[in-house]
Image 1 (cartoon, rainbow, N blue to C red):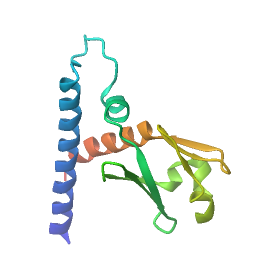
Image 2: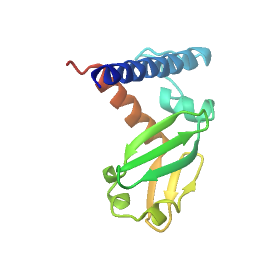
Image 3: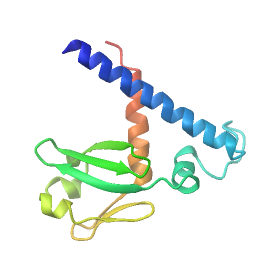
Length: 136
């Protein structure tokens, strides 16, 4: 069990490093400096969404696991806790499955909830950075 967790953590760290490398390469290829002093049109997340066309393709839910999977058009999957979102937390599976995907996020008309792709990506990036810095 311990070895499985180590392998899983190593794979997660590798994916995180690869994602940040992709962001850096995209910025440089588009002539965008990564220095703090330069004016830039897009930050790395906006660059992935607007310049590379990253989109939400589909959502999957598991209420027992408090899990929402966000499938992107690049075949990557982001994981979120349903309970993290106040308006989704008490929803039934049927209500959760009644969503509309837009260019920049997802909307649940019956629940009056909107979540952005930018927010999902930011959360994934931050959690991957925090996981890499955990000691023990």
